[in-house]
Image (cartoon, rainbow, N blue to C red):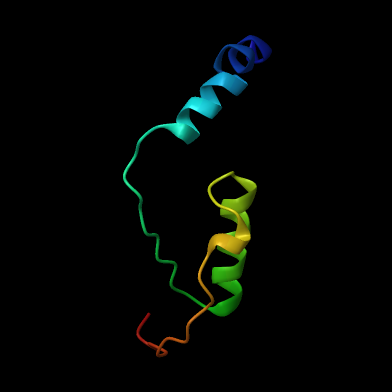
Length: 68
């Protein structure tokens, strides 16, 4: 049963291409956290197909907030 579910919901190459080429608003995503946490998140998003690692801006220093 699980195989049937996966097969019916697997996107085809045509569907994925259409999604990538659709006219959409461009978004800006801000990732705030420790250096290691931000880098890990960027790589995780890359593995998920969200954005290439090199498309992100360079890391910027941020003030440390001990209340977080």
